[in-house]
Length: 129
Image (cartoon, rainbow, N blue to C red; front, side, top):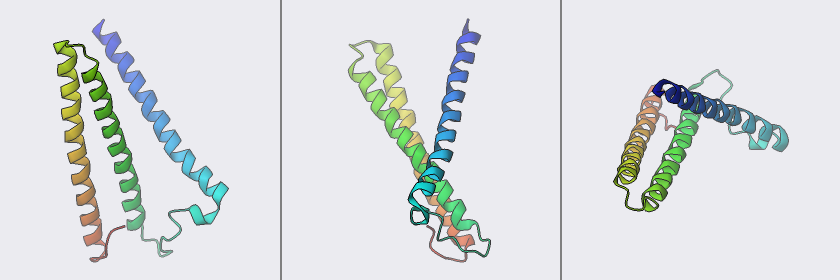
C-alpha cells in the first residue's frame, strides 16, 4: 500500500513540475509576441555570442521562482499550524515544513550570491545582471 501512495505522490509532483515548466516556458514567449520587442528582457544581450548574461538571467528567474514556492510553503505550514486544533502530529508536520522551507530560502540566497559572483568574476569583473 505504501508503494502505491509513493507512486501517486511521485506522479502528482511530476505532473506539477511539468505543468510549471510548460507554463514558465510558454507565458514569456507569448508576452514577447504580444507586447513586442520592448518587453523582451533578453533584448540587451550582446550579439557576440556571450551567453553569460543569459545564464545569469535564467538562473535568477529560476531562483526567484523557487523563492516564491518556499514562501508559499511557509504560508501553507502556518495555516496548517494554526488549524491543527492541538494535534501534536499536525503541529510537528507544520514545524518541519517551516524549517525545511527556511533552509530552502537560505540555500536559494546562497545560490544567488554564488552564481552572480562566479559568473561576474568569469565575465572579467563585470557586474552581474
